[in-house]
Length: 535
Image (tube, rainbow, N blue to C red; front, side, top):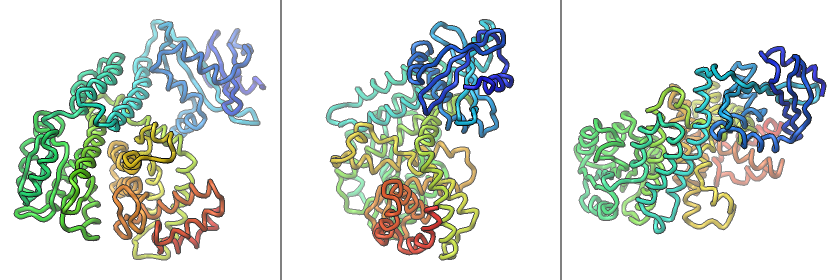
């Protein structure tokens, strides 16, 4: 290629003789290699990108490999450049113990976009704070992989494993991290026992009906310590007494709450208000047990963000299976949250690999669905003013939709490989993935102060698989029980996925699902914007 483009780029970077220059043509799997001699570029031949990366793996410590992957991805570089960085840099240590600095940017040779990369060896006596902090690049990828492994261990057949084995397995994962990052060992050690599940973990049963309390106790007493309350006040008193110990510490570690709605002294809704105000609902699965299963009650209850709602009488084997899944899911999430909260500022972004990976994989769909929602929701605002939509709400809704499938990574890979002929248990795991997504959002959006934005993001992630006729998942909501933003997102997401496969035929398919999958009123508005969506 014309080296004048490279020379112009070099002028923007401090360089010296013996520095190495690499130009990556990602789409052609081509790497152009140069070295700098007497301030001039000397051609050192070409290589394939795959060979280059294989070579890197033999020379670089494992914890820095993710940094190299980020620097050979045009989308990821563009994302960083959006933040105001013209040149992206990071430092790493090679297996030869030397420190190096890599600087990269995107260039254009007049035909296509290329990645320009400058590799510089660092002086032995100049290991800056940035160099020391760069070791956390590897921690990010390790934590991401560990979260998946810990989550997947709970998907094992319970008959083929036991708590001791699970604890040993989790400790081996965490020890792998602490061997390279001893500064986080204390936090991980206190986390491991909680993740694995201990005999003194508590299930709190809040119900004025003695028969129900005793039946639930009988089902779970072999696995958990059972604490019972006959009304909401007793439950809150118990939680307050244990609050000082920390919700994941000491002997009374509340892992789940069964809550009746109709009780004397203080009812279930008052308890839900307390749990919501004191941030229990995102840490502990709350399962409502009630004889009142009406539409209004369900809508009100799910608006709190409870894990599930069961109508009396219920199948205790089903209850046992579902509470087990919920507890394991919440414990995995809580462990990550506790770990993060104990670390320095550099370690508070440990969950970001999931977000980056998700946004990278879903970039095209996120951008398209974002546009669809803006177009579609504006028409709904015109057609149905009673919904109270505004331009500001539509913007937030469209932006919040970007997380709609973030929980998908929680499905074990062995299940995803099948693609069909799923067992009942496998289908259950698939249907629960929106719940994992909502748990991820509890952390991802923890610094976001806009409550409406957070509400939109969680409702879309949790409920866009719900069907208007009640046949969807994870909660089987129907009609007006499904939040408006989830209904709108569902039509846009399904339209996008169908259009990729069958083109304009997607229009007819979406319309044919009127009153079954989709709200008929919204489909009427959808028909009016089809031309705009296709554009």
